[in-house]
Image 1 (spheres, rainbow, N blue to C red):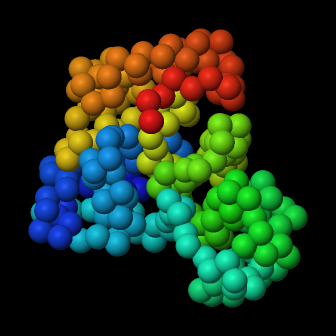
Image 2: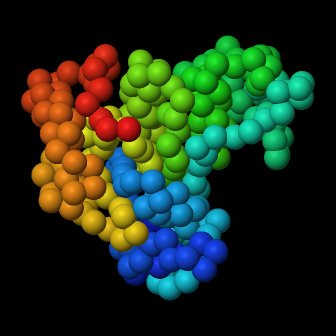
Length: 246
């Protein structure tokens, strides 16, 4: 059974149709990445999946008792507010010290509990948001452009961590991303949106699809070449060069 499935999902934002007729599902243990140009409905789809946006048409079905961990694109925290990582992770409900320690360890930042949120680097901040999502003991982790603002080594390390969490915790993962080279290396399936589903499938199939080329241009061949090279040779995708269009 799917963890989440949409059927003919249509969404409006301020009387504007942002998505139409989306059929999408995700199974346990899968990494699915959602790509598309700005304004293509990626964040709206995520909001519908987590229950923050009501369908105008169609439906979103979640498995009974489904636990979702959500990592937002960004979170504004008043930098003048004295707030330690541990206190932040205790909002909105208190967590045991052991649970906080475990979540920070899973997120790869075991020693940050007493640090001030305002003093964290971009990468540390994202990992704390990830730890917060992991506190829910999720069946599915949804990340909305969670690596925005990270440099490429930080980005590659973050995606390696996500792949590792999938293995260790048997999670399903949905990522919204604009980093096409990473998508190609890190996903089981890619969903390409532009107000509707343009194409969907394994990364190499999507990258060859004319609809995808029309949106992202033939520069994505570089991303695909990198994907194939890593796929065939089992390399990590921690490459200094970046073929993705931004």
